[in-house]
Image (tube, rainbow, N blue to C red; front, side):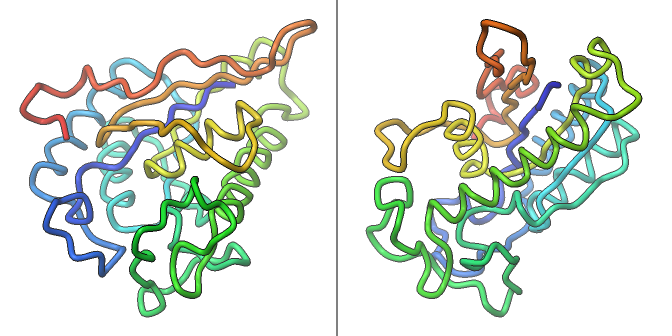
Length: 221
């Protein structure tokens, strides 16, 4: 089973002058160009069966473009929202309850401290992303009517956030709570992870990370 993780296009939350408020912002004009480029590239290069998306505005807009090019219906999932936009129980927070991140706190370095005043911490965030992964492995990778060949070749597009991609890596590499490496993901970059359980080999394979060949140099952010 193949996961293609697509970070959303550039949004106003990614700009240097963002004030830390309004965690649910739309795409910038540059971001809109990026999502057109990634949608076209995916339609020409990846024959996917499923398209999942976070429910925040920047991922919805990105998924809309991907859906338009690929013809796939969007399946929205709150578990792949960015860190700090869900509560400690994993439930998505309404826009009225979204709060700015705590000053001088980096979640993966302080994994048991809440990243917002009343929100989740990094480990709670990792748990909900892990729940999404395991749910898809149970429900999509091993359907009752599949063969090993069709199961291994299923392709899933996941439109999400930089933090979610980092949490995916931490799940796949089964790492501990504290981080010493940050996973870099440019806007609309593509990361390809494959789950293929076979005897005497690791079940996960990393094919590539932060792929941006669909973007011209002036579109990279």
